Each structure stands twice: as structure tokens, then as C-alpha cells.
Length: 143
Image 1 (cartoon, rainbow, N blue to C red):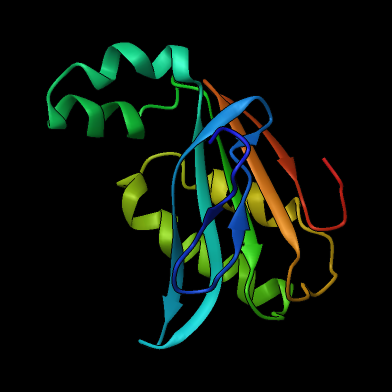
Image 2 (image 1 turned 30 degrees about the horizontal axis):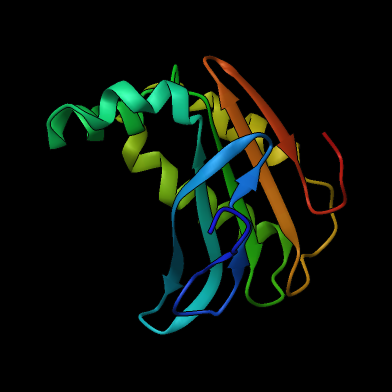
């Protein structure tokens, strides 16, 4: 049903069907050291933008998921308390290899978007990406 939350299996964290006007496409967990479940992440996409892509090949869908011109929201929910330094390091560690050496200065900008406040279990962070614009809501609500 449209209003039923989606549960991330490893953490039990629930993700709403809608976030910032986009529908959930899937969710997963960030695991560190093979067993520490750090946070759950949900990916939300614009169904109209993705409808044409769904009819294509698996490869074209994977390309679209990586293409920032397809609007999306990434919602992160902390599964445990964590210092802001460890959180930003984990995000950078996850993103840097995917960036293939491009726009790496954006990672430093991202670090500056987080206030020097440690994250508590259940803290939520959202990144809404539309083309080359990112709206970021950190755990204390800043943008």
C-alpha cells in the first residue's frame, strides 16, 4: 500500500513511502568492520522521471541511478550514535571511489555542512539532488 513504510531488514529502521515528493526505490544498511550497522539509507526518486528508464535495459537503469539529472533524495537514519567526524568520514569513504577523481572538492564542502554536533541513534539526514544542486538537511535541521 502507498502509505505503508518500508523496513530496512538489517536494522529494522522504517522508511516512509514518500520523502520530499519522491517515492522510495529501495533501502539498505552501511556496515563497518563486517558487523557494525552504522546507518540505514533509503533512496527516493521522481516516478515520472524514472518511468521511461524502467522500460530500458538493466544497464540503462543503473546509468540513470548514477545520473544526477534524475532528481532524488537520499535519506540516512542513524542506527547508533556516532561522532560527526566519523559520520562525515564514512560518507566520504563511501562516495570518493564512486566519484572517479571528479569534483573531489565537493566532499570538503559537504563536511562543512555538518555542525560540530555528534549524531544520536535515530538522527535523520537528507540530501535532495536535482542536477548540480543539492539541498541538505542535517540532523539538527540546518540547510
